[in-house]
Length: 181
Image 1 (tube, one colour):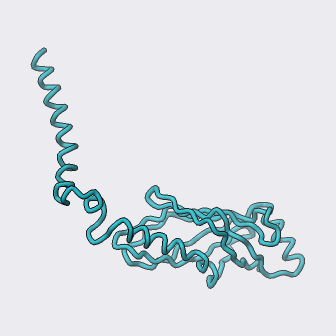
Image 2: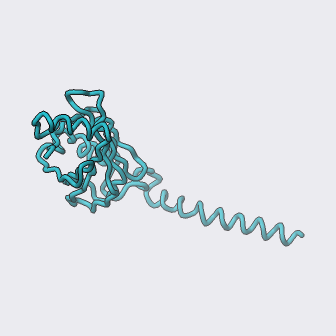
Image 3: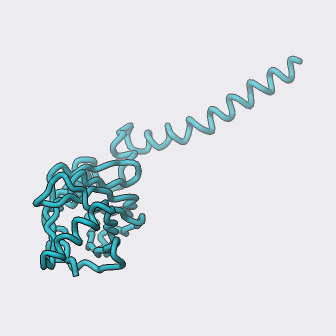
């Protein structure tokens, strides 16, 4: 019985040391500085935050020069260039938001979505955002087409981007023109 207890204690101490020692070694190698231990060499949290918010903060002009592709009556796709300004690969897990008519702000036209994408360091990559019309949005757009309009001015609200469990929220509404034909 004493041998089993001693063996149990030894195995517990071994597993504890295999977990704790590498973490302590990493902190020790970086002078006990949490930022230097966690961030890649040459980077710091403030510059990473500035780079990420700089990219996300430039959303006002993101959709303006782009052409939309009409997939079907309910689905549009838009290709958006995203440039990584950091020295590590970035994974963009999700972009979401709601699209409302500018003339009739209580009419929710569509929702936005994105297939996850990985952007390599300092790479510019085209990502495809899907705009899926709701039934109310389709009916509303059809009413505008019936009136002879060729485009619909919309407001994108509640825009969020998620990456590695971090959610960036854009609080301003973005004004975008969507072609109807």
